[in-house]
Length: 195
Image (cartoon, rainbow, N blue to C red; front, side, top):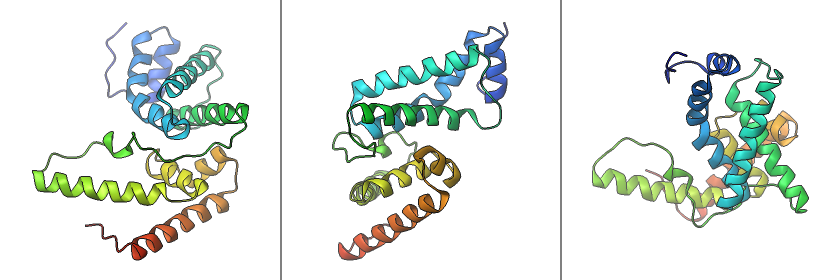
């Protein structure tokens, strides 16, 4: 088999994997593991459980690919995120809790986002700004917080968020609208200024 380049698109990697090239799947896994794992963690708030669900996601992906049931209509990452979300919802249902994105003391979404290296002042200002934004997002009602994270972290469209959370697209849009209104209101009440 040829060496697999990180520049190969997802569909080509899937085709190569289905033709027996294991390295192609490794590239696909490394391309999206941080995004998928982090999304799972944001929902379950437990590192060990997030790792278990993450492994289950990729077992389901491999099983679906090997059975030839993967369709090429959507993007791979949205499909993988949908599997991850559904597994998180299943976990919460088994434990009789509604799946939602909760607050986290030991995890900061901005820790995994790549930012350009700036001077110490820029880094300190950015860190403080990220902390303020995280506090505002954490203070939102669960449904609004969920939409903000899926839209801005997972890069999902409102149509995808609606399908994933099993609400209408208008409900997803409304939750984002109310989230932004609530964030603005909290910023005004607390005199928060984002530079």
